[in-house]
Image (cartoon, rainbow, N blue to C red; front, side, top):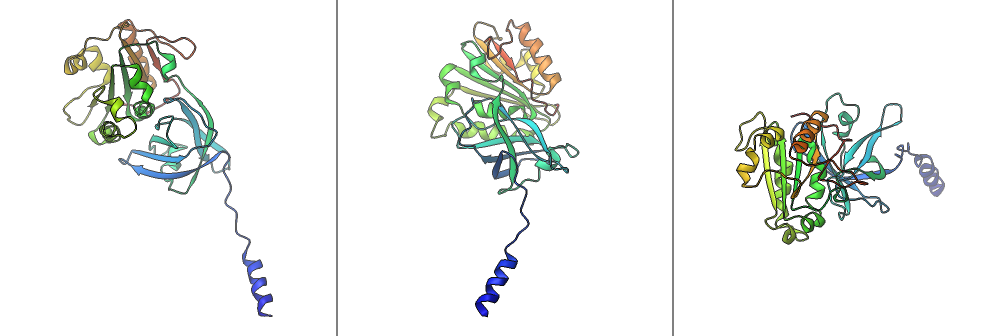
Amino acid sequence: MIHMTEATLMTEASPVAAKPHLPDAQTVTAVRHWTDRLFSFRVTRPKSLRFRSGEFVMIGLLDDKGKPLLRAYSIASPAWDEELEFYSIKVPDGPLTSRLQHIQPGDEIILRPKPVGTLVHDALLPGKRLWFLATGTGIAPFASLMREPETYEKYDQVIMMHTCREVAELEYGRQLVESLKDDPLIGELVGDKLIYYPTTTREPFHHMGRVTDNLSSGKVFADLGLPKMNPAEDRAMVCGSLAFNIDVKAILEGFGLREGANSDPKEFVVEKAFVGDGV
């Protein structure tokens, strides 16, 4: 009787409400909140996923009706990383980020393993200097490319220009850049090639001003002791809000650079899929 009772109890207690399994699910392994507006997180990487540093994928969660709610997110980790990292803004009433900002390690997200994007080395002609131009969370694809060995094998200098409203919003990029020179995998490759030029637009900082203003005025060239951009030596990648992208494109074309693509490499490329926070 005892054994029967135990067996009966186990049978009755065994059904558990199954948690709905997400399509293309990956598990969150780490989350870090940088400010009340910015956070980064890491997830497991599908074994079959191959991507080029600088590309993006569609990620998301289920909405209230159980349908996938997806947005394009640049992969912030390099192509060789065993996990995938993402960097995101928190939008209080954003359909996805209002939910995504609450994820915890162990949770699942949807990740469609079909990487695409224009911020890749293949879309640029060979050059001497490579400029990464970003605002806000637009630094994400460059977080990938700054950790990509090919970046330093192809260029003598790599300049990361990043603009945010406040100093705290630069912290993700600052910590990443500072860690690279001591990185056991690519530290020697990075050496003194990587130049970091962060600026703010609202809070006082040692460098201030928008990327566009610092390029147009020539201030960044004077500050870094570099020549004005020219199509023979300089290449650029751009990632920010739509308005930022349009403005920077006009400035780069004014320097004589031409916009390229995967199928037609030129002197600069713009990530059109990114819709970021303005600065």
